[in-house]
Length: 69
Image (cartoon, rainbow, N blue to C red; front, top):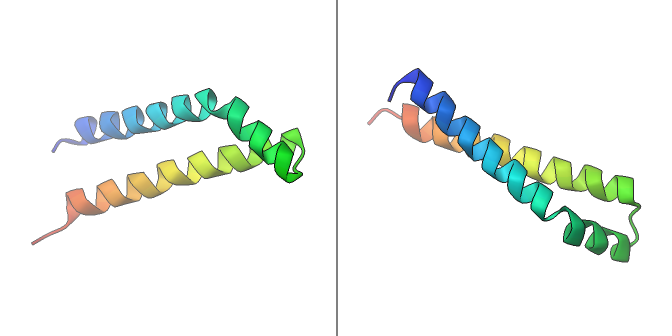
């Protein structure tokens, strides 16, 4: 697979996960506040969760694409 296609694929996955994070922001913040976190802490937790998810998916996809049999 070409480098450009791989980068575009990673970009699309990151964009989709960012969009999902934005759409789930309200319910996730209400959940975090009900547990006892402040709004800022809830936003930080949500950003960290989706940021780490993007990184893990990127590394997993890269490892499968570059694995030699």
